[in-house]
Image (cartoon, rainbow, N blue to C red):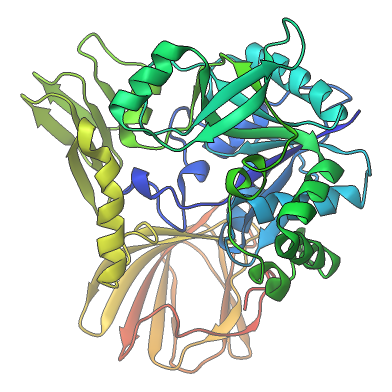
Length: 472
């Protein structure tokens, strides 16, 4: 038996704004440790010959960050499947299943979200082994987390009859939506309910067969998206039209709530889906006053709070039960009991056509990053970092000129037919309408300041002629 981890790395994590944003969602952030949630998910997988390399499913906008984070931890993926648009978990897993079936008709899938915390790694590995045995016999297994409190933010699973004596696995009697507090208290007292973890183990062909019977249009779209998939550098890009045609639905709604093959494996593994700031407070180490902090933080008379500073000192005095999160362009202050309402802030930013929910002041690109420093009437100043070997596209702008000043490193600049090497304290000017390219031929990061001037300074004023990263 070969187990193939399928890591679902989609989603925007809006409840963890302002740190999590559409272009840098929570699974790509170091929320709990110094590694990102995605990296932690991959590194906690069991080792051994029965465990294949992970297959990652993510959105196209995140592909280079996902690949770079895998490179950082030295783990080669089986592949990175790119979704043209988010269609929820059921179609994403269906595409992964068809991709794996083309390689191994007996593939067993271990489906894991990329943004969960699991503290008991050994217990997690044991639960995987139990679930894999059930999957080999045709079951669709999910992990049910033993509840420790009457949590209203999770769905629940009601267990039925045992699958086997002393196995800790049961038939699924029913799935339950997120309850109110009184109902959750009843579930906890009953003892027959588990938190729904959103993690699964099943054979790829079993999942495809069940999806074909229950959601034939979805299965057909996923199969077509894989059949017409094509290579994009080191990525596998699912056919855009076929995948977008799929209905959007979760695994629970599309399959698990309707199949007769569903079983739940009881798991007491220190699990948390880190779905809110209060959940992050719960899983992090706290001081004697119940506080968890990160960054340049000063506390005086503060209890049971989470305070995080990303770009400057944050001082908090004489409060309790708060979440305070500071980034370069936004600050969140909320009571820990109100963190679910953070999503409404993101909705408002979207409705007002703002950008603070989309990306941070520092924006990552496959070649490096840029960060806005100042902006005014007809000018904009950015700090640009180009990684060693990084190369921006050959491009031009209709409405702006650019002045580049090298702070450190070496820059190879193409401007029209002229190619120039620039070093520290040297500069160059790119006129409006001139074809140009910036490269870092050195072994150290290239840091420079870019001053833009013109009638329009939007990022969409880029005409690309050549691009090693094959962006549109």
